[in-house]
Image 1 (cartoon, rainbow, N blue to C red):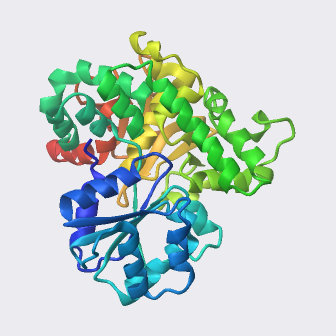
Image 2 (cartoon, rainbow, N blue to C red):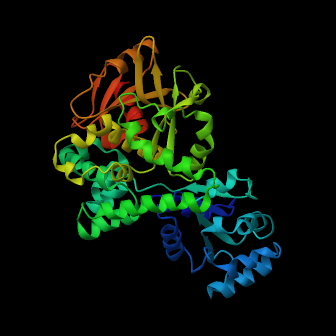
Image 3 (cartoon, helix red, strand yellow):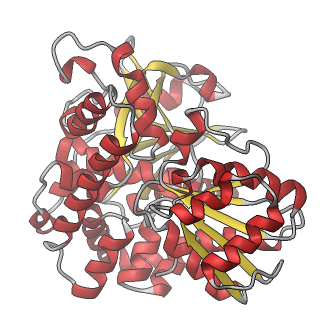
Length: 442
């Protein structure tokens, strides 16, 4: 299974300014597999140590941060002779050993020739919990669920995935119907590696739900195991209310949906914990189309999504058979499945989308990207509905030079004034398409 982040790992290996690497990501997004696969392909040997329930390994870091002594211990534990530059040291589940995490600072300062990479599921939580996090002494790479392109590569066609990666519109146009069918499957299956592998191996969409349900249970188990005791009930309340919140016409997260009288202040710590764990994504509202956009983000107004569209469907008990029912998948939860898909594609590409909403006059845009030199509004057009009037008025009122309507109906790019109509499955390529259409117009 190809993961595009392996290219980032290769760049890290070859960098003259290399620091110890932290591969960050939510539980079960494939961090361990990717590091081991990378090590096997690009190093002579891999010294792999899992710190979960490994008291011997943990004691290795308890005494001091003498790197030579630690290296000797890691050799004994892994059975691998560690050679600088030729061996990669992989420390897995590093959140279970805070002193191992702290040791990365000393690897950087006193032994930079050693290639050290670590993985953990709750490193964001550790960073905000006062752990000795080696700020400035490490490089961080975030790993997300498989993107749609990676899913297509794993389940259908490498050449089709290559065309998606290149945003090769001419090559993709004849395969639009096939890509829409693959997109429907992706909305049900999602991008969790174990789930995708099950589908690739067995071709059974119904079977993936059992795996997704287990992942959701594992997430809830993490709440009880790792979160402060007083936070656990609130974590569960927020986590389990997400489908109901997204099913509203106005998807702004309302705490009173959890229980009568619930207030934001009671749940902020729980929300931050879920975000740090990579379990949920918060998209804040802006009501001003100005740059830098994040300066206008409204802290208390946001929409809340999961990290994976397949997990969202499983959490909501959405029947996988809806793949066969026309555009129903794209309109479920008031279009939230399509919005969830677009969000995780954009986040995996490195964007930090916000959404726009203004009451007088009434305007709403699903996502806005700040590209530095321009704002790029995106509307998710689910199925055959949505006239897009709000987007057109927003574009005119704010002198926006380019906007996108992402739709399942469009076979190819077509333009109406400043608005480009683009297939939903190309949402991660909006910047490249914007530059292409700008050149063509010029």
